[in-house]
Image 1 (cartoon, rainbow, N blue to C red):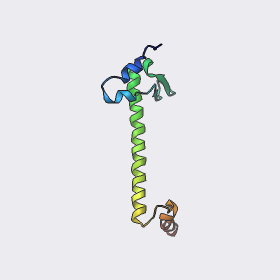
Image 2 (cartoon, rainbow, N blue to C red):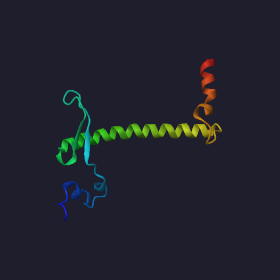
Image 3 (cartoon, one colour):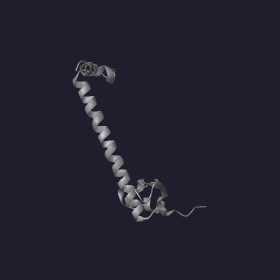
Image 4 (tube, rainbow, N blue to C red):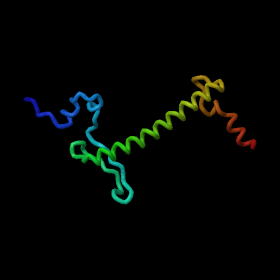
Length: 104
C-alpha cells in the first residue's frame, strides 16, 4: 500500500535543482526584542517570513564558516612556506612566532 506523498516530498521532486535538498525543519534565529529564543519549525508549518529569517541565519553561519576556512587555508599556506611537512604540528611550524613574542 502506497502512502500519499507529503508536501515536502512533492517539493523535492520539483525541477528546481536545490529543492531536493530541502530540510525537514528550519531554524529561525532569535530576534532581539521579539523572539528571545531560537525556534525550530517543520518546513511545512513555517511562514514565508520564517523562511526568510532562516535564510538570514544560514547566511550568517555561512560567512563564519567561510572566514574559518579562509583562515585555515592561510595557516596551511604559511606553514608550507615555512617548510612544514604534513606531519609537522602547527605549534612546531610556528615555534619561532612564540619566541618572537616573548623576546619583544
